[in-house]
Image (cartoon, rainbow, N blue to C red; front, side):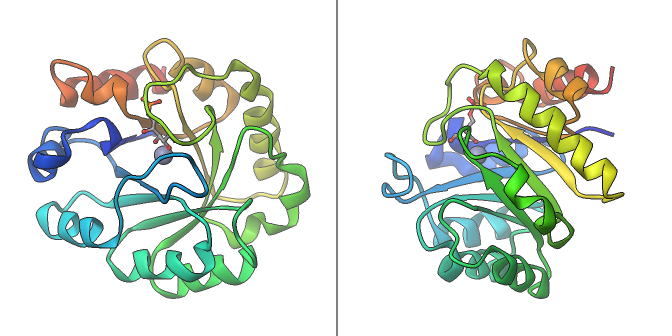
Length: 216
Ligand code: DX5
Ligand code: ZN
């Protein structure tokens, strides 16, 4: 079954608790942490994740777009995130970091920016519970889906299958009713959507609609 992870980047930050309730029925709540160094934007950090954890029982899918994830990612696992994604471009020791995240009880996930190939990381896949293939340059919601990432999604799915692994393949950026079927067809099974969910009149209905398209 495809999973939908609405990105609260497109939600009203002053009403995060209610905005989480507005997408009830989703599988995860995608929380974009940006530090204005790894990406040219600044969002939120640990205290907000801790508060959100108390405000909702929807599992939190933390996407860390920050420098020094080796230092910070374990703290997001300790704060109660069910899944913690770090960027391989920023990680000093991705294997050690993935093991540490898992040891703290969270799912370990690694993200690739559009220009980062999957092939050098083939041997790391068994250390991960999810791989995130970015389908926009990270930093902002509302950008256009990069079609040129479809071959990478396909190659990543082939690698996962060839190794007989169970890890999930997430896509993030420009995922909408227009693009989700192409992502699913290429092999993605976890779909982040910000503007396509929170920009809709009925965010919970948008989640259901996206899931139906991805499952078709
Ligand atoms: C972008 C973030 C995404 C963003 C997606 O760097 O990682 O999670 O919120 O937003 P949409 O779905 O609007 O492209
Ligand atoms: Zn994200």
